Length: 346
Ligand code: SF4
Image 1 (cartoon, rainbow, N blue to C red):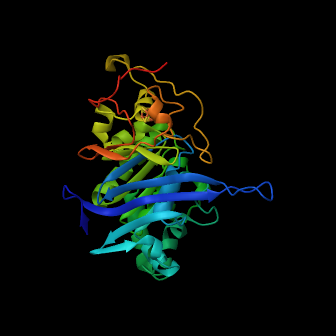
Image 2: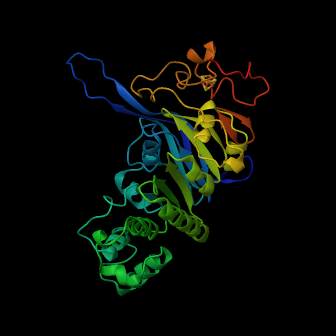
Image 3: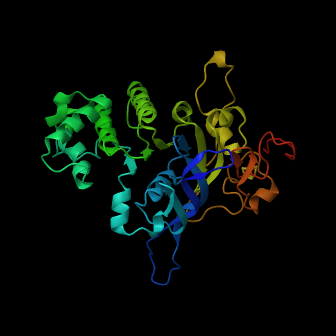
């Protein structure tokens, strides 16, 4: 097990990970172009934490979650999984080794409507992984008892065992998806927009369930969402992503109280506040997120940044740790003493 400088146990290391997908050519001699979904990502995920990953749709956050789980082999870089004193390089595992490791590394999908097989009962859906990983033999009576236990943990009544997904509401279907993943007793779970398709009142129930299950089982979550207000309540740390790169990473509270990156500032300003909170200025980001096939030079955010200076248009900002555990990629972070003017460039 690897520890960081503060003694926290590192579960996963993501080292300079790139994930490029080739774009289909339209002409014979056309140069091959790539969607740079992840463009050099480095971070550590600590055991027992919830790491929130936020950014606009299409910024590459789901791709990163799936790449960590090796659902897509990365184009470049390493993902190291620490288990039983071993540092396992996931890229170097063959299909059978990866199949065994997949029990530890699970995914909860975004869409509870399409991620469940409509022809399988709840019992079959939850039991499928248990038999394929050899935890139980098919028709083992002990498996039914175990599935009942998991269903109860996930807030599903056991009489639902023989029902089909279409007989459930969205929130209940998401509970089935969670039960399916957590029945395997994983160590690390990627929750990919796990509550985004649900009504707000159901969202909080599912978030509470995920928090309770994490506390009981000592799980580690990568919680992916486009909604900063959701991750605020569930995350220990939050990483902010823009156009394939991380732009800021900090403890959740510090990200809100001592924001360093202009993009994070804009995302935070979009969270609704009450007048009692004092309100806050809404920063409107102009223009769409640029194409990941042909991203802007220099700082990728410069085309939309209200603090952009000449340097930003040409030089890629370094990913650096400005204070203990607070990382940022910006030439002129907010609140930094050596910020050039702190003025908004109109
Ligand atoms: Fe804005 Fe420049 Fe910082 Fe990029 S490097 S976020 S353009 S101030």
